[in-house]
Length: 443
Image (cartoon, rainbow, N blue to C red):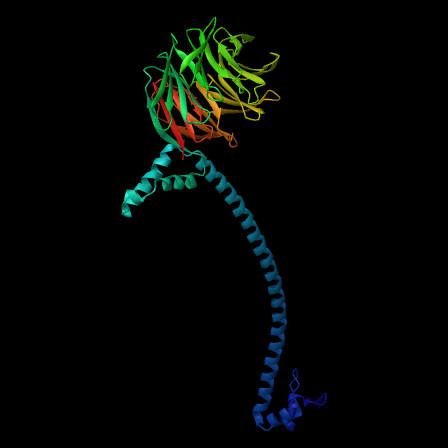
């Protein structure tokens, strides 16, 4: 019989010339057409039926596989996002540590690196057939600065003129002159540009331990093992005052306004003198030899360093002891205020440099790297770099923020006794037991 009016059972289709598949309904016209083909009609109908059944089964499987594939794609997309996110974080962290490592390497670069860079530059010039006359030396400086990313100093000049150990070296306020003191009992004034001795001051009868300019550069003050402090007029280069001491002085300094001087002595005392009258104003005391004395920038405080391993901070007017800083394990050779008076740096026979909170009187940091007694320490004008010199013949530059050594300056053949920095911070002067004064220039 005809199913739903569209077709017949295959057996009926074979007999009547009409055809309908069991599982797929074929229209009467199609069945009639197929029925005319005779005996093969039934088998063809079965074939259509089988193919149709497979198609429906495959479609169901396809729907199931498509759904699974969609889920799989969702999971894969989620996994891929997670993977890329984790990779991004990993690369970010890795880049951060690589940057820190590069900065570490850059800031610990030695003078050898500068030599290599200069060698490469010279080699490049040679290969490029550039005449040295056509090459500006400042290009070397630019390349080194942008390669190293740090303040970097290079040997500039060597001053020779003293016959014995040079104990101290100080710049004039304008940075054009240097005054030095020596065991040869002389004080020499040097022209920075030419390296020549302008004047030589004679009068001391023993080792001259220290000498420095007044803030207006009109006078020089010096102290000696002959137990005297002497004031010299810069214009006439003659002695204008002589102050007698009971014991020889180790260090002497003008106050910022130039009205008083302070001197540290081997008799454990700190004495304050009036410049105009030449009279002693105050006496302050340590328990051992006073190695160094310095005024604060405003002239209201004095900081003293002693072989008793202590640093003491004093009020100039009242003579009151404000702070005692104790942490060094050896005699304290030098101590200096920062320009704002908030910090103090000190160096010692214990081979360390220490940074202190001047207000609270507490130690903040300790820097290690020298191999012998550290004789002097100073801030560069920006106070982001500390310069030190030592009996290990070395001058070291330290990065304040990283709290690590940034450069070593080699050149002296014996202990470096003292140093000073020009007001612009572009030249370092150093004195040595090898009888020379060396200048180091910022690249």
